[in-house]
Length: 82
Image (cartoon, rainbow, N blue to C red):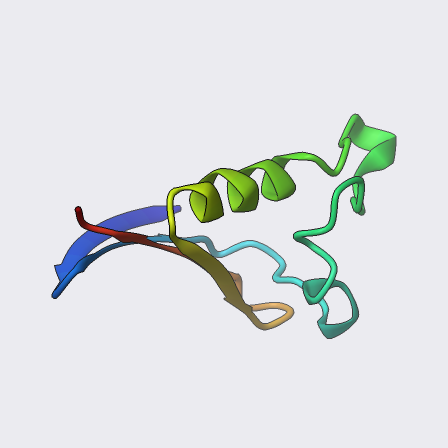
């Protein structure tokens, strides 16, 4: 996993990149939904990313992800600098 930050004008960007299995196109649109998980049998509740999104948006920011199965994922957070 690699985490980086940078300032870009009026925003702070945080990027988290992994080399995991990636997220399938069918799941990527749903990962921000409360209670959506593909790991329920391993104790997943499907709340983590929904909470991240809610907190970031409450601070005027945005979240997103780019992923390709077999090539890992890149999650990003954009927070306004005030």
